[in-house]
Image (cartoon, rainbow, N blue to C red; front, side, top):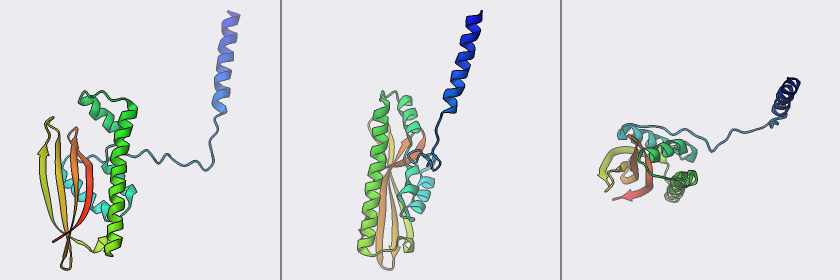
Length: 177
């Protein structure tokens, strides 16, 4: 009986000592890679918030329009697609990198054409729905803008995952005639 009490007391003391030695930096920043994705059940709501967010020309505001890792894992589990965690991470990072690249191109184009995005007036919104052979829903969304006599458009592909709409791919800014 004495050995059991001794080992129990020794185990409790060791666990307190190891817990007490946890070192935390004074200026520790929160993890910036974690964000919560915005869930939109209706496509017009997604488009409205997306076009309001893109007018700020800040990439960090656009990140929540891409599904996060947790949501992608749940989606792949629901669809019975066997992906390892690193493959899911790769898919999510691929979506984020594509959005970042396209966003950077839009900013370069706006600067090159000397256009202030906030002065553009939204005129109409066009939806072009579709389904692939597996039954996945997507939509080509185009928002038209006007500034004086010039007309512009911003388009992207929205995808539906587990009954929620997200930014998919191909964010483009074009001068329309």
